[in-house]
Picture 1 (cartoon, rainbow, N blue to C red):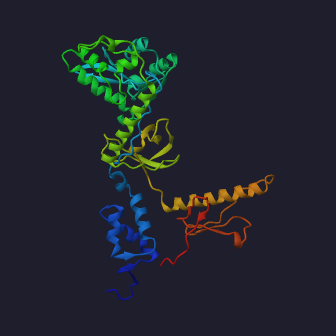
Picture 2: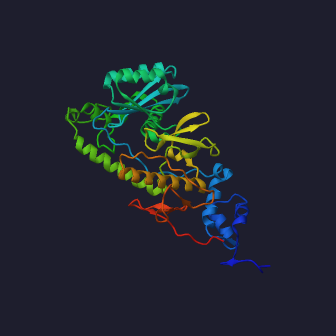
Picture 3: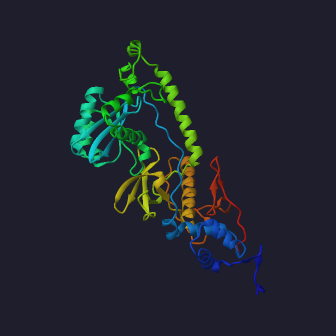
Length: 402
């Protein structure tokens, strides 16, 4: 049965005309790149089959939408502010049918919990004003994207009081981890028979990451509690800010070590403006329709994405980049070579006007020709050409493609 067939490494060599059809057969069952390569390895072969399998799997709509969620990225720890109450995190807490406003200082871990009669932006602003009256206005307030914090009235409040309002990435509470931690602590306090006593005990207990209690850092003294202590321990005294910074940094490094060891995270590629992408959060069952990357957002690892419903902000973990097909890659390299040639000509003759060259390019051509170029200056570019560190264009040799 193999008479008249060209065989290479126990595989039938497929001619160009049949490669597209054979790729569809290999991809039956919508398996991944590795499985498709294993399926084709002992059956068929042609030059560049691995690259073509990667391309067809990457462009498959069903494979992209049912792709698994992306793995975690390395932990980014929030830097410790220079002084207490410079930066605070806020969030809302629902407990036994009631709503509470929770605020925590990034430096001292001082906690404020205030009940709201209704979860409105007006009442949230009123409670924050009373907190600011005691401790002053912070430089920065970090919150999620709840309607109480994303309203126009809250934006006007931040502008009039002169503090920076930063919101975390939607559907990514980890980016506002301090406020999430504060909510857990507040819930435990509210479950106590005497919540006021419980929050006082919390404020007077030393925090391991800074070596002092929140009240001691905020007021430069230890507060008197139900626990007996010497009177001299309650005297006013200054804490060592340098030691606090060092202890906090050591605690962060320890947390990052155990986090990375547990989850084995890896950094995801940086997205560029104009990249095609799909979005999926924890509430979604599959990746959504294709969208366009508008650009990087202000918060780390976040991007603005243009979807059919408008521009949204998402964390990089929730964004899957759609692979480009070979035609787009070839066109990008051609544009780059043309741009470099125009820049070189412009540098040699700064007073000469440069007109846009016209390409004589066919679909299957691998050669770019600029006007009036000689055979010696002709640039041959394959679709898989890459740039080296020095910027030189590395062009693979042409091989026989049966």
